[in-house]
Image (cartoon, rainbow, N blue to C red; front, top):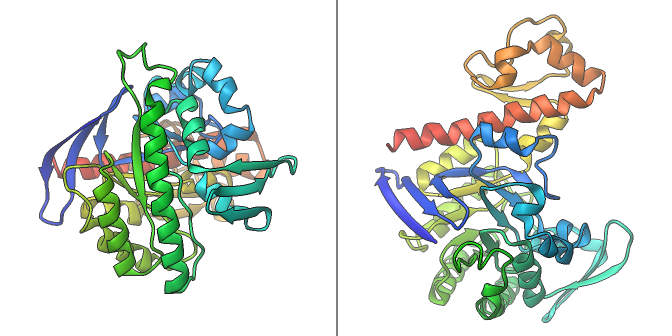
Length: 362
């Protein structure tokens, strides 16, 4: 991976290009989440037309179904889902964290039960690397523990130390097996890129320590994890700012699982290069749509005969063609097309925000 910063702002924001095996990605970038090999309701050609350069795959879900070995035999996730552009996979740590009543945490890793059928499984740093290598994303993430909120300093310290030990194990296993990625030979010997994840709860000094110790391990990029787990937005912003200060300026910086439109713009202007969140797709399926004038709940009766486009300032295919009245009708009638159109618009809005921020830095 190469990361070339082209321009910076007084606030700390930067315009850069991240050169990955499958795609050059312009940053700051928002990455749509494709949990089970699909960004829900949106086909891959539509994502390309929206300008998405990199999307996410979910290690936990793809491990359970269809299985990472199936994906490996299909040539990797890029080929399996027909996505020629860049891709990132998470470690599975957050999903295991969300199974609080169905998991057992120990030094070796996490034992958990599948949410699909209750079967027992075990994820260790090494196994997470095995699964992610088989999936074949351009960027994979070190296995970490995503901690609950609130948590006192002692609990945050314990989690931080475990995550750092798991980061070392993840890196060692990845470096020993990196050439096993399905497209290694096809792309001229290219390999994946492993990012470390900064934890530390809502404690600034622990975030600093975690960042400094991860930087000593020398990853090609760094993520800030353990946010958007119930804390107020102001605290999320505070933790990101406190952590960015101690991450290398010449490597990509990724905030995981955020956020609302106003948040991702703030983070990008602070110097965050990469962000992802299920919010635009999940909210779309429930009728919450983002516009230049604020949020709209398209289910509301006030839109029943509204002939205006959803957002007159938006240039997406949904706003160019359909009225608010029609979008409301689809939602109320529970037509499948509703989720598809709503998601297209919300993703266009999020991707457009990042394009605007990049333009400010041009």
